[in-house]
Image (cartoon, rainbow, N blue to C red; front, side):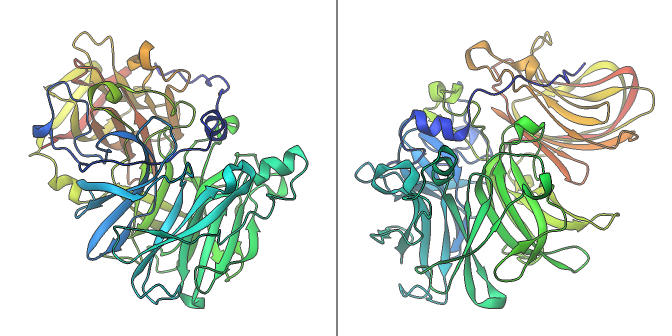
Amino acid sequence: MPDLSAPEEPKFSRRSMMALTGLGTAAGALAAGGFVPPTACAAESLRARFHMTPPHGWLCDGQRPIEFNGRTYFFYLHSDTNHGDGGWDVSVTDDLVAFGENRVAIPLRDSFPVWTGSAVVDERNTAGFGAGAIIVLATQPTGGVRRKQEQYLYWSLDGASFTQHPDPVIRNPNGDSAVTPEEIDNAEWFRDPKVVWDEARSQWVCVIGRRKYLSIYVSGNLRDWSWVSNFDYLENGAADLGGMECPDFFQITADDGSTHWVLAASMDAYASGLPMTYAYWVGDWDGTRFSTNNLVPQWLDWGWDWYAAVTWPSSQDPDHVRNALGWMNNWKYAARDVPTDVTDGYNGQMSVVRQIRLMRQPDGWYSLLSTPVPALRDALGAPETIARREVSDRWALPWKGRAYELELDIEWSTANNVGVSVGCTPDDSRHTNIGVFDGKVYVDRGPADRSDYSFLPYRQAEAPIDPQARYVHLRILVDMQSVEVFVNAGHTVLSQQVYFEADDTVIRLYAYDGSATFSNVTWRPAA
């Protein structure tokens, strides 16, 4: 039975972790590498087969990818040491599945770390560095002072070398004036600028994460910025969902043809019993202010491990489809060694790239739906299928593996707990359960927890599902040290790290207190 009890109060936050190590997370120098196909891995390797990983060292927040010279450039925070200071590295992909050609983009210089921000291609030469120049805004702590987190500009004409503007282009409005503990706390939270082009008004918009709100700035040239408004989700007594990091802001056309703006941020809503991932609001933007009819956010992922997510327009259908990618980690336990440190010399991976679409729901509200990019199927092996299987208790599939996609339909009438166990040992002593129980869909990694790399108390993630439902479609991605679960049409997704061991290869279907019908059970091994 799933453990539905609430986990204990967390001991860390992202900010406390940053404080423990000085000035935050970041990057450093690194050699070429990236996506490593299984044929290139030693037998003992735990490297992900179809996820972006760094060649070595620590990977942290991803930065929104850009299209440059016909290719997709993905920037990310990197350090040679776990949770150490550094800057930005870049990886290149042609299909949004295989990433490589890793190199340093904006290095750590003079102990001045480069934190999260965003890059844009200045096609109109608004900044004056040349048409098509890459412009980056990134947070750095001026003078090494935490309350002076400010936004600095870098530019590049070739995507290989970046030049820094000497002074911040968006200064911390509270860094010098903060006196009270609350003011200082807010001043120490002024980071992660997300820059977008507002076509209707011919202006750049920058959204910056604050302690309990988002600050919005506008500019005509990427260098001179003016504050125009704040977005405060705590109005009208809303639940406190923590600080707002790694914001996102974009326009998208829904399936019914209507156009909307989406404002988002990564948030730690653990204390309110909600996820610690990507919260978003659907609303309107008038050039100075974002408004929404509902201050209660929706969540793009309900797992423990989909933080600092970024989205960017699909090249095939930029109006209706965006790609999305998240860091598969959680600041409750991110600042530690992991099994891949030992086996492969790296720490951290990104999720698979998803496609997100805005869909009108029957009650008239809008939500984002997620599905893996179609190219992922091309990166996997030939499918094998079991058309139909009745199960009561547990039944093992006639195939084993540690890197694969599993897709299936489950129907039941009398059973009260149905699902799939992945990463099972032959004796079933270790496993990760993915199922439906008591009006919730869940991923429980508790039975696979390791004493040397424990996730306790963050063992089970869950999301609401129709309690009357007697059918569910699951698409499950298992890749060496991770599990991602797409439920039904992708309205619900749960992403988790799981530290699988060598014998965790068996897959079992289960139904308790009754039977269930499993149909179209299809698995595709990593190629």
